[in-house]
Length: 419
Image 1 (cartoon, rainbow, N blue to C red):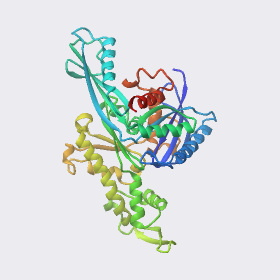
Image 2: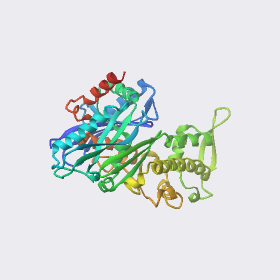
Image 3: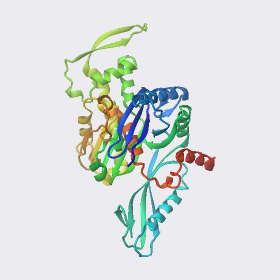
Image 4: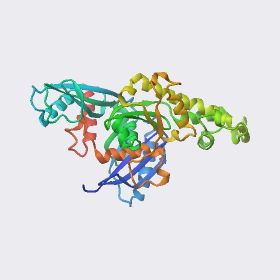
C-alpha cells in the first residue's frame, strides 16, 4: 500500500484539534498536531463563523508547521450538531434458491440504497451490519450460500443539514475541502475500543466539554450512535456558580481538586480559592475540599445516569453486551471509573440486567502521539484518522466516492433535491 498523508479536524465545544498523519501499512503515524481553544461554537454547533474560522486556522497552521510545513487541503471532520439520529434499515430481495453471488449482494445493497432516497435528513453513515439468508441473520458475507431470500441490515446515521453547511462554510474560508464527515461517537469508538471489544460488542462514552456522546459496536460495525447535551463544561459552570469563582478558575479547580466520590475526600482537606467579591475585587478564601466535591459529584452522577437510561431505553445490552469504555476530557475527573462502576451495577441499576465491565479509554489506534496528545481528550481526532485510513464503504455513497469532492457534491445535491 502506497503511503499517503491524511488530516483530521476535531471541531469541539471546548477545543479544536488537527492531526496530520501518514497512512500505509499498520496504524496511522501522526506527524503533526495542533490544538486551539474553541471559540465560536456551542454544543458542537457554529454560532460565530469568524471566531470558528480563526480557531480552525490556528490549529491547522500549528499542525502543518509540525508536519514539515506542507499545507493540507482535505480534512476529515466530526459532527455532533444537527440532532443526529441512529436507526436500522432492513431490506430483502429474492434470490430464487440459487447460490448467492456478488451480483445478488450488490442487488440487495442497491435495494437498501433505494430505500435511503426517502430519507429527509442528511445521511452521515449507512453501513451494512449483517446479512440474512431466509430470515436467519448474522451472516457477515453470504457469498456462496444458498437461499430463497437475501436480506441486509443497514445502520443509518443522519443529521440536519444546516449545521454541516455552516461547518463546510468555515472550512471553505480556511481553503480546506471537507473530505469526509464522521459522527463524533463513531470516531471516538474507533480510537478507544480495542479490536476484541468492537467485534464482541461494547459501548463507548465520550464525555466532552459541551456534549456526551454514546456509540455501540458489534461485529466491528457501529450499530448505534447518540448525543446527550450535557458535558464537562456543565460541571465547570456549577463550580463557578456554587463557589462564586470565574469559569477559568472553576475549570482549574475541577481538574486539580475535583472528585466524583464524596466519601473518599478527607474531611480535613482544605483548598484555597479566589472568589469575586461584591465590589468586583478578587478575594482569597479557604474552603473544605468536600465542598467542591459536593458540587462535582451530583452533576457527574447525573450525566452517568442519563447514559445509563439511554442504554436501557434503546435495549443496547441485548445487542452489544455489558462492556463500557469512558473517554473524553471529563472522564479524567478523579473517581469517575469508580462512580461509573457503581451506577452501572445491577444493585444500583437493576434495569441493566447485570453488572457492566467499566474501564477508561484513550486513543490506542494511532502511533506517534506525544504524551500530551495521547490522553482521552484527543480520542475523537485520533478516530477521525482511523476512519480516513480505512474509508469504509457507505451504502449511500458507493456511487459518489469516485469523486474527490464527493461529499461536497452530495451536500449540494441534497440541498437541490429538498429545497
